[in-house]
Length: 136
View 1: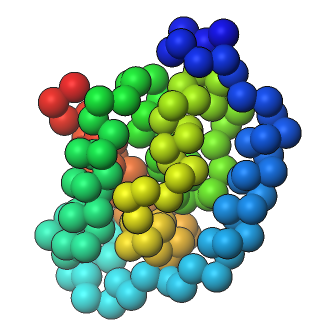
View 2 (view 1 turned 30 degrees about the horizontal axis):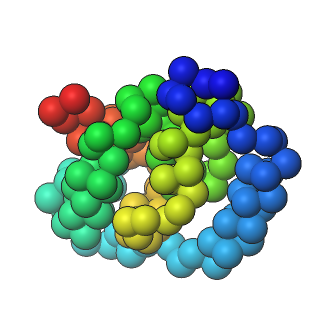
């Protein structure tokens, strides 16, 4: 039993669900980032839909256990995968990430489009972590 009160899910259940979700999301279009003033740096004000989705996500998961919360969501929204250790440590948050609620299509598209831009990606991930840790 994990320290969050629920028994740890079986790996095969998560593996099957991750594969299904990865297949469903494989056709995500690239995010149109042509309106950025500096493509090397993430600026939240240039991505209002991303910022709004992230705020909704933060509100939806504010009361969930904190262990690896931001890392789980970043990993899932960026790569459609979650480390098994994180799932075992915080299955409640992992389940929420896998549920797709609230929707985060703009966040996913931005992760997809900035995959090769490491400076931008790092700044976006830092922003994501900061928003997710507010008022905790």
